[in-house]
Image (tube, rainbow, N blue to C red; front, top):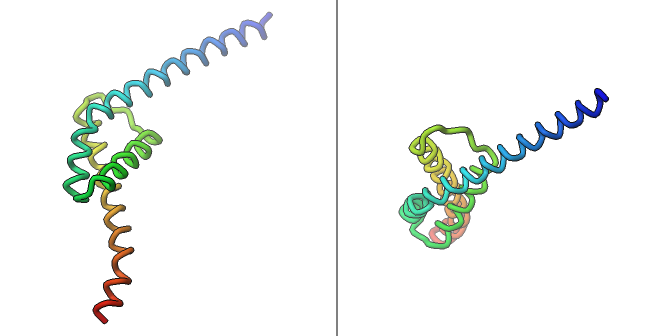
Length: 109
């Protein structure tokens, strides 16, 4: 009898946790979609390239979805996303520079 009550309690708590996680994922998606135009404009300014800007925004979404801290205000969440996007865009710029450096050294040597 006690085992059955314990199992029912566990199942109920698991359902509550799953519902909470689904709500958090939905909230994250809505907040990200609201911020997407800003993120894309920033990436476009930093990278000057449509395709790379899309990649940076996608990488931002992927990275942010794994480690989203809990933010009460929309502004704090958006600021955090902008920082994540800037890191992703800078990584693309570093990669671009690495790809160009050997060619430049070879041509001007």
